[in-house]
Length: 315
Image (cartoon, rainbow, N blue to C red):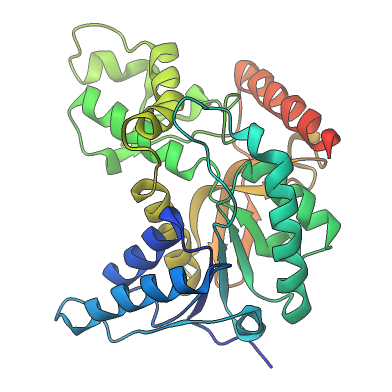
């Protein structure tokens, strides 16, 4: 059976899985959605609750149902949110590694029983390590397995920088790259607002003082864990990040967004997955874009690579 374009399978019906479900519905991205969860009653509750929103005028008449892994056989996109997430007071996603490797192994065994064609979007953490490990272990097509990675970090950074300069965040061009975690970095030489380079922003936008790069990067990294401490989990931001990727694939956009992908020789590396700008289409990742990184950014990339490699070696 071939792919049913527009069919989405969400694995995991916790805080993030349910947020992805509701965000996809609100944005009218897709009209055939299946939810899989170990606790089938939880999945049914989420499906029933979400299905009632389709009666409102702003929502499409989507099909939403509880399913099992056999539903993956003709899925276009599979989003994986299964496994535990970080908790208040524990900001290290890598502490989830051992448990989520076990969870993901069970999930990937089931998925690959039914398909090797669907585009898999990883949200479970630590997603860079999981993306690399399971792409290699199951020999899944590298262009069809990716993580949300630093897409949300990038959105946060763009919002913060836009606010500092008094402009809409959508006018900011700048990526957070590398690990979705403590070693993520910003290649400042590639950041601009409508073509104005980062180093010229203070003058061109009449700022009272120069922007503190380190403070901005630190806040970009810490805001997610801070949200976890405040509300117990994060869901809205990562759900919209997943929806951005889902929409790009469904609409065959060929847009460029930073997502976690197994490196295939970019910058001389092929033994980790990390976030780099990628062109997304209906078949997943069409191409990885190598930005012209300066010496500082190349050093930051190496630090992120070495850290991720150490984690992969643990498993």
